[in-house]
Length: 105
Image 1 (tube, one colour):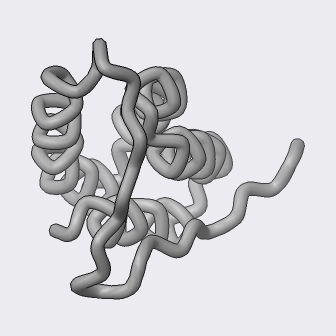
Image 2: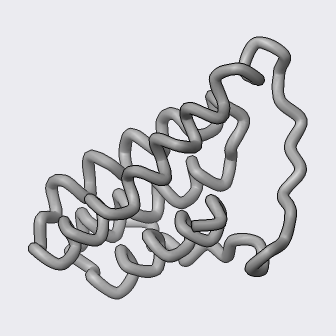
């Protein structure tokens, strides 16, 4: 099994500039808002030891992040999925924190 690694988001207050495909510009804000809404349920799943929810949410982020132009979300999702599979609470928590930092939450 390939170990996952923590992903560092941008420093607090830093602006992240992305170049999005024209077809995604109207969809990206909604996608990012949905990922912000994931933060609470991810924390609740981690607190409850609900590894399946963490794994599925990570898998979904891994699959959708790059499609919307957010490679960091794909990386975070892959690491979260791996941490959940391995039942590694510390690493799963790090990925939730990384997602929050990336989203500026």
